[in-house]
Length: 164
Image 1 (cartoon, rainbow, N blue to C red):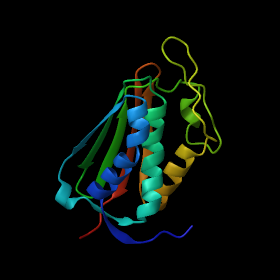
Image 2 (image 1 turned 30 degrees about the vertical axis):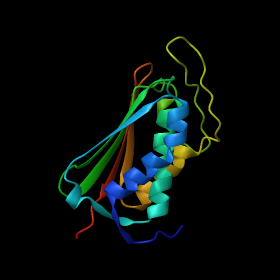
Image 3 (image 1 turned 90 degrees about the vertical axis):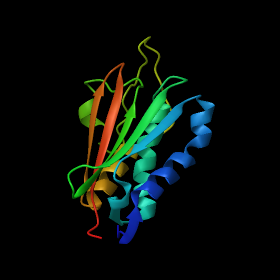
């Protein structure tokens, strides 16, 4: 696909994605906390719509794979002077060691379970994390995950900052 090359303010991008999740967040009685540092320098060159898709998939997964009343933290900072690091941190069910190596595979659907063993099965085709990684890499960045089953997950999207 062809990416637009617009100058994007990450603060605006993040807030648009977070506000778009409001109905689902309220239904689940969750809270999303957003923390940003060095905002004036946080601009990227890229495709606004596709980055919203990528971040939206990450945030949506954090919201859906958590029991009612959970918290999601979104942090944004200038990681090294040339890149922005966006982290989506949840205190949800986490990802099993068996599923973790495959979460970015197209059409892969793991078996997320609560600490009590209840299977969480939100709708989906197993494409969200594949799309998020593909979009991030198309923007010259990378996407990583750390997770512990029963404790939650941390997805980190790193994007190059614009020169301006």
